Image (cartoon, rainbow, N blue to C red; front, side, top):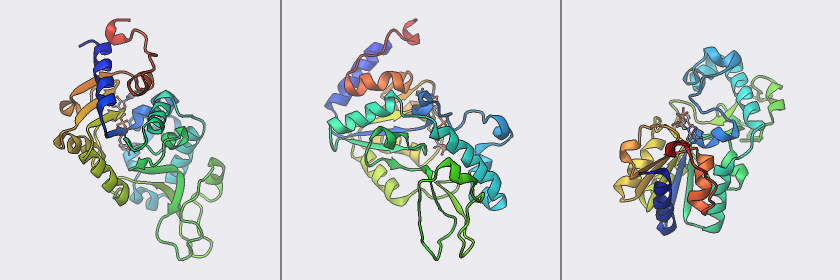
Length: 264
Ligand code: APR
């Protein structure tokens, strides 16, 4: 089926759905210049696999290295802005209060920056810190750290108990924030339509939300530039860049010219 026909079909599904869940991954931020999680690491970090740095064990083993890696990633994120895909989801949420639940695996904070409210950020937020362990002096449990503060102590420590600050993200092997996951699961189990946008579908439990929706009778649409682990679940797959197709799908903004699938 040609891309434009798929777009029209999915646009109709979105317009008729009462409850929509959008599950996003790194691909939705690709057009903002944020490398997807599995992009090859560059420069100093080329020799490390993210999976070997994004763990509590790695942090305890070499706090400075892990802190510096996040300082580098924070710099990347500090200089990027939401793209048309983030803005389209935020606008849809504004136009249809209560109809959209936005669940993201991204830690870049771009959905929030675009104005989406009540974002269920399953993997945390790279712009915030939290204590490595409960600190007897909860002077601050989370703070928006600027990249500049990342150089003050690597990592910063509590001057009373020596506790270390760590990025407020979910590391491999750690539990996801319970309330966010519960709400995401509940929304997936009660929606009419799930849009799975820019995720490889490799990491659970987030990727499992598509199956929850499917089993509850929802339609599942996958929006991605390539194949994903969830393709077999999809009622429709749209191969396009999220920033190019979401404004049209969600808001009816025809901005897509002829695309590769149609032999541009
Ligand atoms: N538009 C749509 N999809 C895109 C775009 C784009 N412009 N660019 C890339 N993609 C797709 C890729 O084809 C890929 O399927 O985005 C997906 C990115 O996949 P990953 O890099 O695996 O990122 P993600 O799925 O978000 O990873 C999930 O895994 O490692 C953990 O915590 C990490 O949150 C991350 C989670």
